[in-house]
Length: 353
Image (cartoon, rainbow, N blue to C red):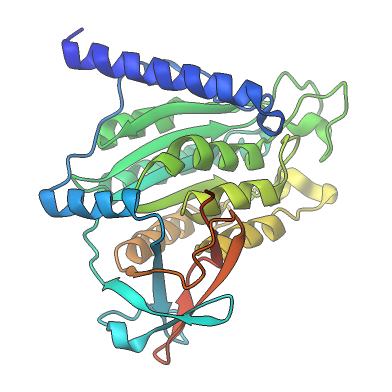
């Protein structure tokens, strides 16, 4: 092993150790950590930003009083509207107008992306489709300065590939995941045969836990444009956290969440299906959206194309809040324009002292 790889491995082990201690010390995080995976053996790739980008990153690391928002603008048909100017927008925080300090429509800013894949029993028939089309998406969307990671979730939450720019490594990670029902031996695969686990049934789909961990342990430590793409039917079974915990973690990580709703309706039968409700709440609060795919590969490909287009045509607004209190409270944001409908996160959490 060369020096760089050894150093990277030591750093990764140190981070995991620190996270483990922190998780154990806080009751809200009790029992929450990624499962280990052989894919994690290689050290994560690091971004090498230009001087201009490094200066921008330093600004956002040091000047925590600046709020930065990435968003899209669409017309009444849902088509993206490009080439808008700073003067086309007004921004409000808690109903109060704010002075826009920074504005850009640059689509080439580095992107940090998390891919979350549902590997619970309900995805048995659709997982191969997700792996194939998702791998193609990563190969097409990643640019030299982008980074991505892969997590799968079922009865556990597992980081199968840490940050890398290699689409090959990411595809390998996606193709390595398998359906895991936690040893359930019922007639229906996964979920112990029902939507609510009992003491004798294993947890089935730790979806909310996965979103929380991806946000809190991975994306919160990154700067710049960040997004999470979740391939799931939206049904959570047995997470220790609630949907609001997942939303709050994503908001604190400044991460846009997209959900590609891949539901095998035949699996649920008479049990009924309602996973889309929580997913709409998650995406609307973070500035993303739900795209219903069903179980069709062509619709999944179309959904990935839409997400790629939105991520590459974002506007960015930065402002210094008139309310400078460092109280850790959530503050609502509204971005208005006469040019179309804005798709943006609903707010942010103020820093604490």
